[in-house]
Length: 76
Image (cartoon, rainbow, N blue to C red; front, side, top):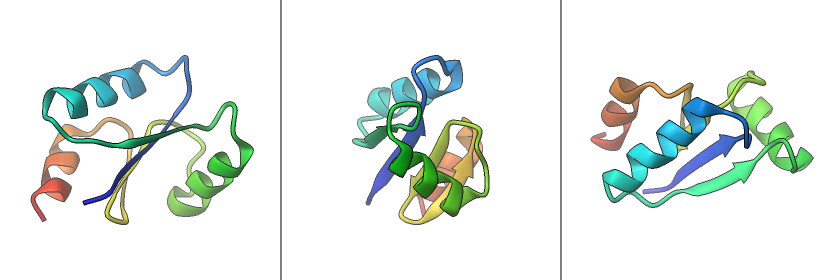
């Protein structure tokens, strides 16, 4: 399973999402879209959104820290 989180340093929901994944023992790759334009463009291409967090779980895109959607995607 591949989990990617697109974040910015000032995003509270990003911190909550990362903490949730850590507490649940799920490893993830994080991209700081504030510092990395290529990741920002990739995030926008995947989600059509500029807001963070954007979470990609095996190609399933979740915008925001939506625990219900995250859990559904993890158990797919």
